[in-house]
Image (cartoon, rainbow, N blue to C red):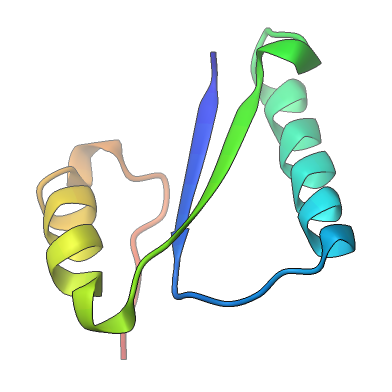
Length: 75
């Protein structure tokens, strides 16, 4: 605990970008949860733009608004 799953439009990340994301997200988790580095897991999950509404907006945002720390403001 905890596990962070970041859904995003497909894109390529360099190994340096992946490492930087991992380090920064891990540090945020450590700063805000009573846990240790080895307990943190992070996933990057690409979701095709055409599937975003069905895969993310519906089940992850609309149906789980009570869990959101920040809601999107889609244009």
